[in-house]
Image (cartoon, rainbow, N blue to C red; front, top):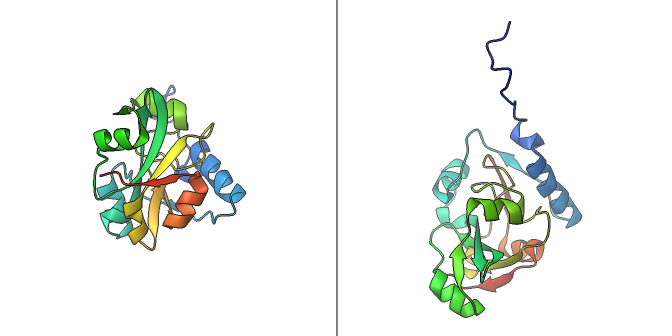
Length: 168
């Protein structure tokens, strides 16, 4: 007899999670490798992701969802700094605000801490921090807080259809 709660839902391993599978499918469709790294623990911050990968925190591509005049936008930023919302809002010609968890989930289909740069239900207007360009390899979330994948700056721009910008 099991001691588990009969109402408890069992989560699939991160590699089988539907969000990760969507990211893998999007990477395949883009002709990009699908080397997803499954980490033993959740890495919901850039510092945790960097420590888990043994890389500089700046080489972590944070996927941050904001709203620009109410419309969701994704900003891929280096983990070593924060987005200056006033400056970026001015540059983009609107008011930039941090999105709620509900808006993040609606726009990307993914949870905060695991938002990938692709694999979303519909395209999300994306901007990519120019400071990521200094790293030959960068790491992005793969749709689940336990997953990341390596890429480089030019590939990240291509995968996302993103526009390069200064964020701070």
